[in-house]
Image (cartoon, rainbow, N blue to C red; front, side):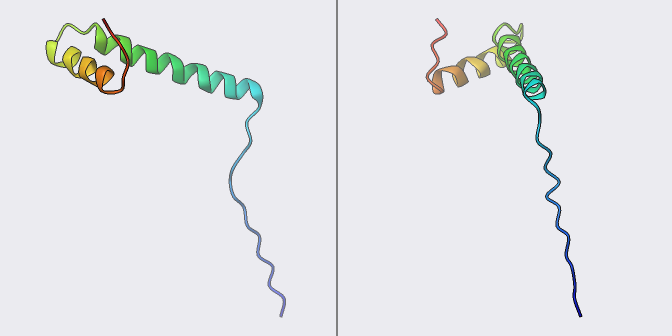
Length: 61
């Protein structure tokens, strides 16, 4: 009795243009979150982002 097993990883390779679009969207989202919390009116949100930047070694002054 022969049994054939077909496996599929389900991983699809992306083209260069799709990778650039995904990377650009990730960059815009990250900058929006960073700048949005950095200039937030609520002091708790601003201080949370400020302390995180210092903890990661990024200067902000």
